[in-house]
Image (cartoon, rainbow, N blue to C red):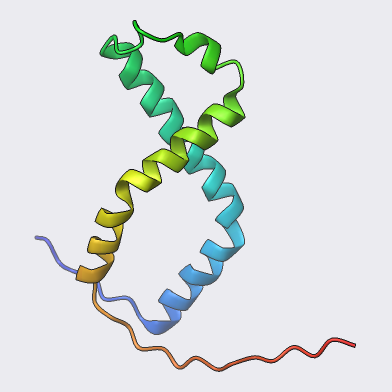
Length: 101
């Protein structure tokens, strides 16, 4: 049975709060996972014969950042499209003013 679960407002708020809390860690995890999967696919399909992947992998941070940036560029329209299909939630947004002294 495929029953759809409806989240309560409290559950949604808790998830949002936890996503904000763990955002930096999740971003690093996503960057590493996409770069690792990309590298695996390139090697598996022997797409690395015309460029030296091993040299690129020497600077893993630069490589991972570039792969994630390009991946997100390629998928930004599909992500936006998927977001457009999601149920719209109405939020009461209050403007906060910060006063600096």
